[in-house]
Image 1 (cartoon, helix red, strand yellow):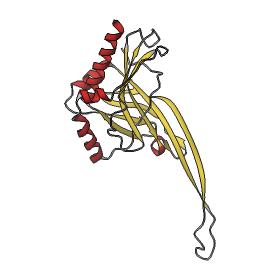
Image 2 (image 1 turned 30 degrees about the vertical axis):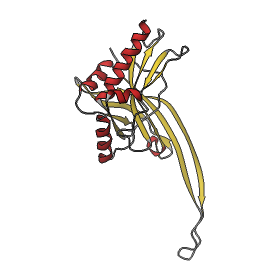
Image 3 (image 1 turned 180 degrees about the vertical axis):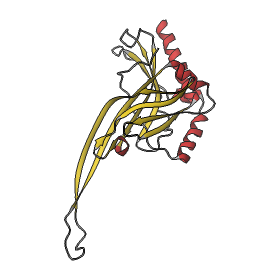
Length: 222
């Protein structure tokens, strides 16, 4: 069974990681209990939506140091669809980046796949880029006076605000593998230009998500 290519909206992706900041965030999140994670877990169940969305994006940032973040989410189908039958649970790692982390030069950075460890060993899966937005503005910077006997021209500075949303579906067995670990699960989003951004999911995040999925599925069965 292969992970489903989801077409569900998510917000997210990762920034370059400072080792000390990464370690501090990982340590803090490893100390969070499942109950604390459940308090910050959001469930959206609307009758007009094809799935119940379960999100952990209210948790503190992890490996993402600036201009980006990532999290683990799930969707429980409430209607049959090409993704599965009613009651099937889909899991994914989502990420959103903005500012300089989302583009190179004046163009968007394209992300190809996510690299991660699974119970059988190293694995990767394609990344779905669900959204791209960008806007650039130019500012004329006046010259600073005569330099070497002549008056230089004004310079033009360009400031770009770009964002990109990513989604990587993973199997329930992968989430169960994460929950079984005694250390954070590390993964990377890799761009076509070779740029890689790293983040983590803690075992308790995975446990909390699995339990919430089972809880919501039990409600559906009543």
